[in-house]
Image (cartoon, rainbow, N blue to C red; front, side, top):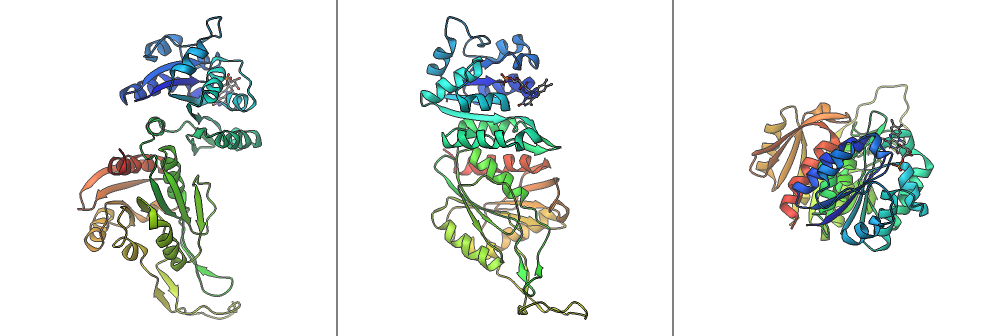
Length: 374
Ligand SMILES: Cc1cc2nc3c(=O)[nH]c(=O)nc-3n(C[C@H](O)[C@H](O)[C@H](O)COP(=O)(O)O)c2cc1C
């Protein structure tokens, strides 16, 4: 496992650094903590000494040049939590604190570098933050994306940060589908559903954090999802074709889109007048899972929305070859939080997850990594 220089900066989330260090240690890593003065406002020196298992924490810049020793020793430099202040300093080569100096030195030494930002939502959305993170990505610094909720960009779950350091899905290509599809009634009206695409976005975030190459096949919805390739589609048929194309060389397909199940039998050209009744005749659209899964040789992950989620998932498992099914009741669609059951292809419940969609993504990706990783 790796030698990790854990560079902690002055976010309120710094109080979690001892837990993060312990989680990294339990995962088999050696950890040396490097902290800024601001970080020490949120976490005590003794707690950092106790959890820095590979040597004393570096809390000052002294004549001993500890940053040189740590940046040469480490395999991975992880800035967590990363303040906007320190992220911006790294981008500009301002090295006036132990974590910024160590991180920049590690970057220069060609070490693997990750940042896990934590800050207010408005700071995270600000142009300097966007630009600084993009610059870091250009330098191959991996960004362990925060959880965006309650107006905050909260530090990613500790398991996600540990998984990112482990990079268990490196070299694996995963295709994720997300969002709704739209079926045209006429030129201006569509049949669709309230899928927000947020689950797909969180799954992409989690897969990227674990080193996977991610292709997102996305229906017409505006989501901020980190992916190497985004294929935009509108109708269910377009999604089917895009999935067939994208999965040709993929190791895993996660079907979490909510494609429209029906479409009007014929699209009316122009705009149907709105002053009289309209009866639509609908026909089913292609079932993407049923068409693609039997042919696809990689890991097959389906989502099933059903008022009786576990029974619905088991019925799906009886019909199509599938490795994992995430089942949820209909009210989860478009919501911030929810309850999910993750079943294997035999219909056995492996995990029950309650909470935000990032939590679901972390749990699901643990199972995907267990099956694909190594
Ligand atoms: C109570 C409090 C909480 C803060 N939380 C954050 C935070 O979560 N993220 C952030 O980027 N800055 C936060 N700051 C601002 C940083 O502490 C400040 O920019 C500091 O100079 C960072 O120093 P460092 O990057 O060297 O650790 C907070 C400040 C205070 C007083």
